[in-house]
Image 1: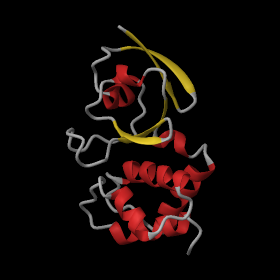
Image 2 (image 1 turned 180 degrees about the vertical axis):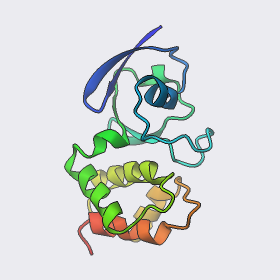
Image 3 (image 1 turned 60 degrees about the vertical axis):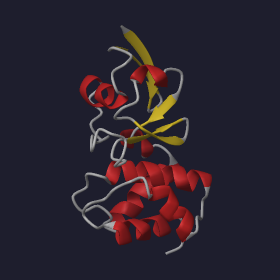
Image 4 (image 1 turned 90 degrees about the vertical axis):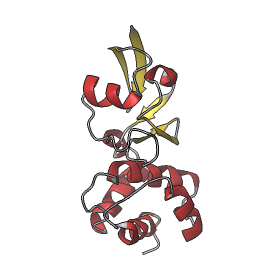
Amino acid sequence: MSLRLRINGKTHDVEDDPDTPLIYVLRDTLKLRGTKLGCGLEQCGACAVLVDGGVRLSCVSPAGTFEGQEITTIEGLGATPTGKRVQEAFVTESAAQCGYCTAGLVVAVTALLEETPSPDPEKTRTALAPHLCRCGSHPRILKAVETAAGRS
């Protein structure tokens, strides 16, 4: 069955079952492997993508539910001023240790800063709470948010 998905500004016609979770279409069919599969239960946030500007987890949700929406993966974030600024801040602050959660966190921070350009620490912590980092990079991630927000 064919799906038409708009990803990173391009339309893709793919032959996949609409019930296939979006992450498998991204990684296996379209070879966009920046989005990571973590828990596979929508509990760790590693699989986050932007959908019409909001954070959505892609490891369980069927790809067919994303037709007609604009999907932005970590590969497409650098094309936006906010996404580029967030990516640069993560590098500047060494906010990735093993890097597995990084793509989902960069997506979440980009969505946060698009909605609230200068979030207070509480709002940042709330926005990033669904994203698990097992390496303990949280202080550097929070510093990267401050840098991307232009406060450090």
